[in-house]
Length: 507
Image (cartoon, helix red, strand yellow):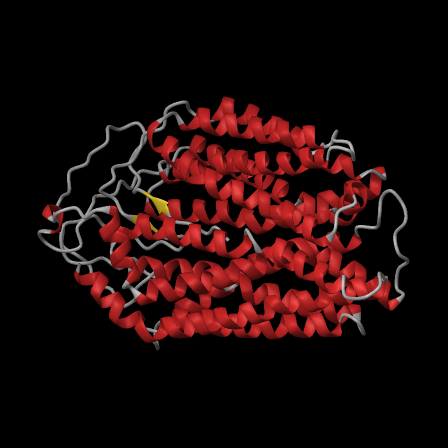
């Protein structure tokens, strides 16, 4: 869910930074948001057209490779959750807390590393982060069943390590490329998120199956991390030319926000952080779209952890597989779900961007309406998947895939909504608040909530495997309701988006 924005416009890395703003004649465009570079009247920032060097592409390759490892480590635990539950004798609530601890630590550490990345050597921060989370992940594979609390602690530490990478790496890419190429490179970098997530499921389930011991799932990515660290040291320069803050946010589709939106804007008095937050609180398009994004994060966080377990319990309830009593259980559901995550993530983002590009030509409210429709359809697909699980497992897989596909449609679109309804001088604050809210109220708590509700339902009847399936099935209904609320939040966004967009253009 972190399809973020790249900051800064590119110049030749070997040249000195030029912060002067040169007035140029603006080119007017009919589109807005990310499908076209909408340039407003007033001074603009010159952008270098020099072609990137081969080393720049090697740097992107190294950073993308490390980003794959980053998100593979995110989703190793969901891929072998059944084995971990049995090993540590965890209930559903405690199992859900594993992912909650990870995301909370990530969320709280990210602003700190963002601060360091703006002020200190970014290569050192990246290298330290890769080494730290790889070492902790490797150590996780040696934790015994009597030290469950250390396993929870290790997941939190891995979250801190990955935060150091996710907040700093995109800025290096942004500083190596000019406008057009930068957009492409950032797209490649962020497409590694669904691919890495899916590979995390696949790696975990495959290693558990091949070795017969789930601990080996935590011993592969540290080796890959070691290679990433070597490549980082050899190929990424120690000092990378930073771009001037005069250049504004570039969305993942290529919308350049220039420093001065109208004459005299450069001399405008700066506002305090409290004033910015107050202004954003009155921007209803930002408020409602942020709540919609939070609903999306809630659903994806819960699905990411619990879907393989849900599918396993459904198969046992249907008599397709036997209840696992061995040390290592069949993780084929994680393998399949990993493939679904990769495919739907890539297709969903591409489909969302293309739908927005086409529909914006006919309606200025297209973006929130696309998001609302996708949330409603996704919720319907998830509800059907949950209900048919006790009758037909193949139909469950199909509807889960469609549910994830429609969820993925929104990631890029909701990013663009923020870009054109918030004035550029408040965009950094808006992004920070949106990320904080979506994690804190979304995927940080949803895995734990689903697990706790499942535990509470199980406690009402005698322990049986059929009832453990039903308890998780009933708790998943929460995701359907949250998804529907998310759709309504985006519908409310459509009522305000035209007015807020015009107001942002005038500020």
